[in-house]
Length: 522
Image (cartoon, rainbow, N blue to C red; front, side):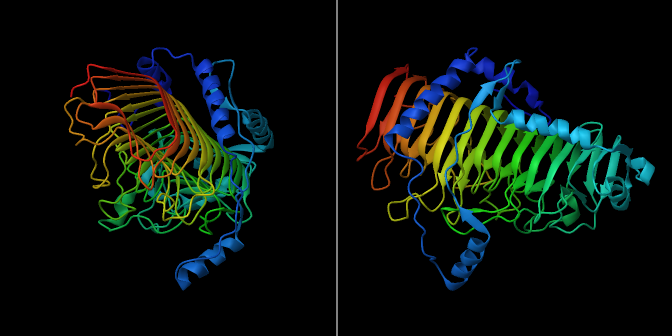
């Protein structure tokens, strides 16, 4: 059984995926996914016509939502980002050419290259280097070089046109001072309200030093604080070859100035856009390894996130995900990432009082021993008695692998799943391989669950094996909260659950073709 350590090299993910998917012709698979996706959009216009909903809830809730609406804009639809393969065969978004052009502009703007030792920095793991970093960075237009060592700081703020570069993961470590406040962001951009642009952080480890807090009940404060690296209201940003260690909240957060809870149909102003996160590792996070909020055009590639602490949540209720594409995010592309031992490997979602993430595409992901390998949902918009989501739509996924999802102490009441689709419309999952542990007790639960008013969902080329103690490999839930408009094609179930495909009562529109079950144990 595959096991991924915290220091797993995510550049190897493409090769690992190939071992599970029989050398899949990725270009053809992506084209097929696009064709299937266009079919779902033909079934129902998306997004639906927005209606501005009146404020509901208690007086404090209404006042909070009213304040957020002053800082928000409506969640209008945007054009779908296309993907392509570059000459080396790497999957990239169609806007990466723009980002590459701005990367050249960033280098041209570098007036000088400086070394932090020249400003008094000492990487002895003891000296406070906060002032030395500040002097080295100055007003930007500078490439700051940090050598090998452990550099203590109370926090670093980067102005526009800044490159901050170490000597490598585990070689250069930036560590929070023992007296730093719980809400401190180890590295962030200088001005969250006016915004910053052209920032590069690379080749180092970021130790949030959660140990300094002792045995606190909760390791984070609020919003996008308490993280290793936060880009808030940043345009043109790069985070490459960086390790995030034990943050109170997130390892890496691509965000708006403030998280926004103005209600479904609204997004925050001042989101980040055109940001690339590549070859990142993260572990010990209190909430999520990588997260995005109210931001556009985010590219996450070859990253590995694992082993959260979950300490940003109440014990036993930790929604701690490897990668979370959260409230109001749009046009996010995930390529050849991996996750291990998280609550969710990849979660695409929103809170009830915010817009859902939309127009998200995953191409290649390995989930190992996560509780829910892939979890798509809009909280508070699932049941027939709840308002239907206006913004939960458009997810495409190609070449996914789920290895042995498990029960977890992070979220004690959550059953293991290879995938859950709830509330979202226009979802295509193409080429999905799921490998269970034949001796593990899944307690009769399904491996893939399509439920809670999901609509226009296509599952194609699904391979499931060795979930002997699950109830079904794929279950489409019925009842008042049923899923509907479902197409399931080309399913191979081998030595797995008693039922390859289970359809609940009341599901009105479902098509199943080429489903084969081999040697199922009844």
